[in-house]
Amino acid sequence: MKHVFIINPTAGKVDKTKEIREQIHKLTTSDPVEIHLTRSQGEAEHIARTVAQSGDEMRVYACGGDGTANEVLTGIAGYKNCALGIIPIGSGNDFVRGFEPRTREDFLCVEDMVNGEEMAIDLMECQGKYSMNVFSVGFDCEVARNVDRFKKLPHVSGSLAYKLSIVYCLFTKRKHPIKIYLDGKPFEGADYKNTTLLAVAANGKYYGGGIKAAPLAVHDDGLMDFVHANTLSVPKFISIVGKYTKGLHINNPKLPFITFKRCKKIKFVAEAPIGVNFDGEIFEMQNPEITLLPKALRIILPAKKVAPAQEKKEAVTAG
Picture 1 (cartoon, rainbow, N blue to C red):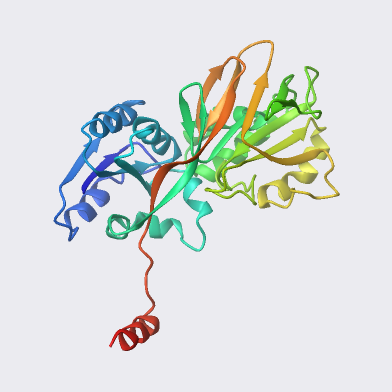
Picture 2: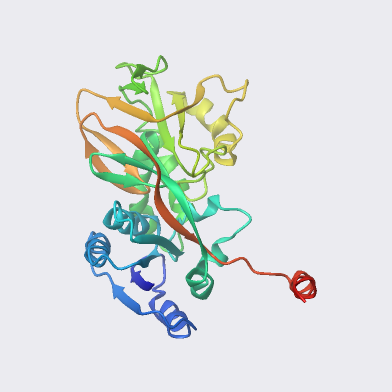
């Protein structure tokens, strides 16, 4: 088994390359190890695809944020010889939040990742691009599009940058004229009028720096969680944003303007290309259609740590 680490030095507020390298050099494995550093956007995808094409059995680790993870995912998608590991040194790191009780710190331990277990999860595909976490259009996409301008401000964390972007877009990006089709059938909650605030297709629970948009999502159930919110007034939006952030909006009778469904295919139709958000990466697309690919990707979950009392009990049982 080969272990390939693709490190994005610009992920997060501080370059973590040195810390990751030190952990890699301390690995106890005798398997071959490669380290690659990215220098520009898109390079992680190129590196991942290049190593995957060798056909060797390997684990490819995306060391960065959700954007780096998405690039590496896109590079290895379709290569059955590859499994994806996430070392979350970026700002948002939303994908790994959905694997409770494991924490971000568990995924940051390189030794535990190398010795971790694999899990087959679903993928979402759209026009040759992939998402393993969340795909969105409308308000949320515009929020993601504007996050970078706030990340550049001093002392602004990833989560705070998302919140600042939400406030900015609240007054400029609340109305989106699109039609939506779920599994080929028209979704009655959206039309070409300004009835859509946001629409989310989710395979993971979190996005936007910890917003729990799809609290019931399961990574390997063969279905996408679809969440749609109608356009709201600014006061109404402010009154419900806390519930949305905490994941309290699904099937909530007090929030009839938010719809939750499950499906295998979603199509968005608009009169002009629309911005779409793939795990934090923004693209302009004409009438994007998202298709679920069941268990199309193997990911790595960090090895579970055994508590001392449990370890002693297991040793006695084995004896």
